[in-house]
Image 1 (cartoon, helix red, strand yellow):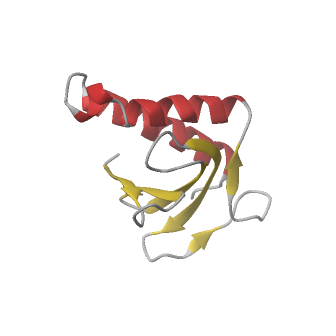
Image 2 (cartoon, one colour; image 1 turned 120 degrees about the vertical axis):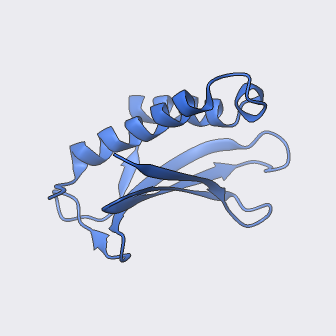
Image 3 (cartoon, one colour; image 1 turned 180 degrees about the vertical axis):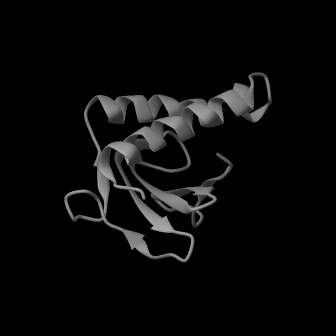
Length: 119
């Protein structure tokens, strides 16, 4: 399945970061909220995501809600994946960037499959 990863689309000094994963049939919007100064070491405090069609229509979850909040062990896993995407090694191509991106996308996709009925 082909995808395009759009990382860190945000306003300067904003404590909210938007990441998008665009597939052929749908897209996933991931919203990260941080506390602390964005210039030094911000702390990730909350992650939400929702799924939309390519035409920007929101797809509802299995339970009828729209957004999914990542929490518990999934939140810890997400933090590690985001850390890898922002690492020195990733930015300077010292590690395989494709593997890091695929780990991120596969993790988010597993959460989508668990919470949404995609037909």
